[in-house]
Image (tube, rainbow, N blue to C red; front, side):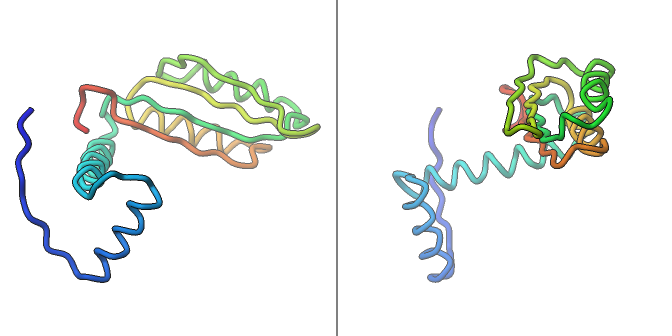
Length: 138
């Protein structure tokens, strides 16, 4: 793939802060960092479409002593209109566990799964990471 070159004008203070960020993150040059920013922006825009094919990881941290909570977590996963590829269970301490659920579906379906799980009584925290699938706009 041929590279196209273009210029970017930027305030000196903003550029200095950008260069410091690149150093901390280990970028070899500004071009690679700008390419990553453009890719991230395009992927975020694509994921605004609830029908965008996506891959996601939903992580929930919960109190496994709450009655019926584990059954509810499993039931919601089974009933979701997505492919749950796998899940990993982690014991955090004597009372709390975390579940990482890897799923393939649309951005909206994965987002909905994360929201439904996080809303359950006994779930302390829930986060979703949703990525456009390879080959889709990125």
